[in-house]
Image (cartoon, rainbow, N blue to C red; front, side):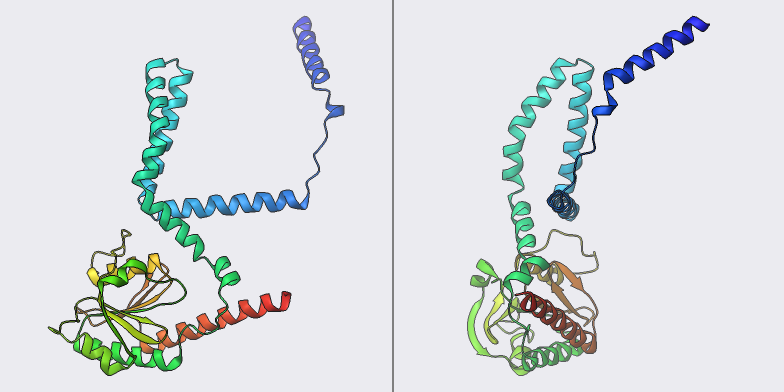
Length: 286
């Protein structure tokens, strides 16, 4: 018994001697290392959040399963299975880039529309003139009472892109009478979206892209198109439901439903205050 204890003690002593703890030291952590870790953590968080909101989440779970099978097949010496997985992954990366090109594009657009990017590149203090907002809200709530469906896109810094080419050129002054007349049922321009750019109605009857995100089964094509358009540009998109007469706003891929006029006005006031605060902070630092 004593001999066994002695051998164990001798083995432990030998292990500590080989480790040579006296030479071990804690590495110095610099401020740049902390910043580096924070940047990587934020990047991983943004990527995972973006994956959860797109079809790539199912793909991501599938890749995790394949990687686990690959490790198990390697450890258990399942050479055929490991060879198949290895060859599939080598070709699969290119296939993923091709199949999910729209999702990757959407992710880059979301980064470009992020709050940090807006802080550096957005210098305008006013989202839209109050007169324009009042005309749009007046038209929306008049149409809401009559349950007339409508989509009004108020473009900001990022243009709507190729989707505006599907509409009819107008170039008119923004008035509630003109907006109501455009969306009047059975008129030539009522089906589609109105595009407002530089405080003028540029186009009507524009066909917008439908979102692939889940926004609720009770919502129709207008709401899916408004969210889809807000995913490809930074516009504020006003939606009037033909079924319920509810007024909603889509922006940055999110839909704010069933809003009153006072809530919308307060929303724009708060957003302009935030933008002005950010601009003033950066001007002060400059």
